[in-house]
Image (tube, rainbow, N blue to C red):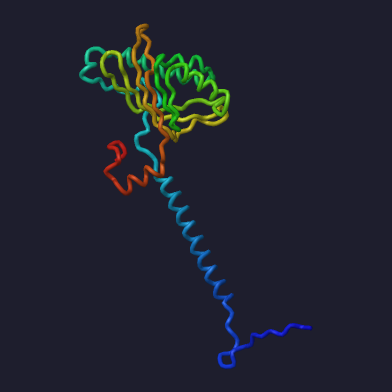
Length: 226
């Protein structure tokens, strides 16, 4: 027996209108709006990234910097000290390029601290050396360091602070010009008259976030970037 539907059109208003076309139109409008917003956000991000270049690029040669000598270092820090500090940093870079963790670690004091750009904190030369031994044998294998020096300051006869921009690159790639990290080295002269790194801090530059902060709060922009 065939079932007979008990539902029938209203004798006055006729059949109930279908809502399917209306819902489809709403979905189309919402989808188009979402795509427009995504495209606008993407275009905005690309614009921010493209306009986030820095003005203060530094110099590739550490010895080309004009050192700042504080009152406590006046008359004690010399041009040879400047060259000696730069030699330490150049030798550090060479050790990285060779993938020699032992030689790399020798550029740090026994109790040195090292903070990587991801926030990993190494305590002491042994920690720094073994951490880099693993890095040189892993995802930083066959890489080199690119540096651009921003400044050097001497505090007393045996302490220097060097700021720089830096990045890593593979031997197969061209040396990068857009260096994504900002670094601070604190070096001290030890009893054997060698300058070694007592503290190192590395920070990843967040291009877009920095650009946004400068747009919304222009006074946060450093003098060198104005």
